Amino acid sequence: MTETVPKPGPGVGGRTANPRRWSILVLLCCMQFMLLLDDTVVNVALPSIRTDLGFSLAGLTWVVNAYVVAFGGFLLLGGRLADTLGRRRVFLIGTAVFAAASLANGLAQNPATLVASRAVQGLGGALAAPAALSMVAVLFTDPKERTRALGVWGALTGLGGATGVVLSGVLTDLVSWRWIFFVNLPVAALPLLLVPRLAPESRRAGVRRFDLLGAVTVTAGSSALSYGLLNTPEHGWRSARCLVALAAAAVLLAAFVVREATARDPLVPLGFFRRRRPMTANIAQILMSSANFGTFLLLTLYIQQVLAYSPMRAGLSYAGFFVGIFLGFGTAAPLVPRIGVRPIMVGGLGCIAAGMYWFANAPADGHYWANLFPGFVVMALGIAWSSFTINIAGVSDVPEREAGLASGVLNASQQLGGAIGLAVLVTLASDRTAGRLHSGTAPRLAQLDGIHLAFGVGGTVLVVGAVLTALLIGRLKPASVPPMVVLEDQDDVEVRN
Image (cartoon, rainbow, N blue to C red; front, side, top):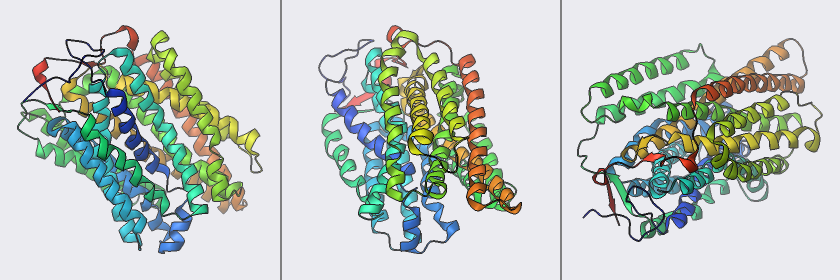
């Protein structure tokens, strides 16, 4: 039986808003925060994991990479499954898989088990993340409310990454690295218990076919692309492993495009990519995430290996990042309805670039308040502004029946950007460090020079990205325009309690 969400509330187009929408948002945000946290939570704990489980240096990188490859590879599939099978159902399945894999991570007794469990954890995240964001877009029918909800969602991006680094250092020093995974369990338990009671189900109505061939090609192609990119820091761009993976990704993604052009009910309608505003938001997402992922790793190397901070002190040093995140969110929320999305997004990318330039000049004997704190604040401010507006623009002009797809593409852009950032920035830093070592430079100074180069290049790329975004994004003022998710015929969306 098909019905609308019960009880009136702020809404548009003849639809009523769910009176429990803000409670549901809190639960969805808890899970999204945990998914983002797990992108960085292992960084500071890696040396302890290597010692306890006997990882090789090369194998240790896959504690991070296995999660990113699976997460990035399955996101488009996860978004479309949410639209087709039900957003609440897919979210709960993904959350349960994520929680079970987190438990397996914490109990792992050997490298193979930990890497495999991290991959399964990424798969759970790829199901839960786009389903959650599409639920937010569908639940909030009033433009002003949706702006606030998506702004909160965007603020979690930088907050989750920074919290992961802090939590990793504190738990590793005080208890054990295993607790960086065990803490996921109570957080995942909340939405698993309460979302079925509070949130209605929603899906595309009347869809009976599923584009299996499209799902296989895009998932395999995305996974191959992430795998190839993430192997470049260790093996180099010209290695057979990277070239084969990238070539396979090109062939598979080309096959996916051909398939989608001819399929009766495509997994991703190609017309989706002709929507200028969402696609510009996705480009900005790739650029921001490349800086975000690369920055957390490079700063961790700088703080621990150049400045010689302990794991706990390294984690706590990210306190400045939280200042910038809260400052950014607090200022973006009132500014976006007044001046629109474009100035805030462009300004955010510019601030991230300024933060990267700041760290490109960090000295070998740097002090926290003089050399770390200002850069943390400026960069986090930029991440908050960019994330706030990217999430708004990324689901604008999109039919509600494609909300899961739009969310999946936005999340896939985040993971792709992270893989590119890790590949390019870490490779630049490693190559420059190796060259300086070969010329006789002291190891500490050689590593610092590599970090400086990576931050300088990253900052320049973001400046170019800010200019392109300013030219392409168009004007969007959420408080004064129709809903960002276009509500089509009532029959187009099936909602069930």
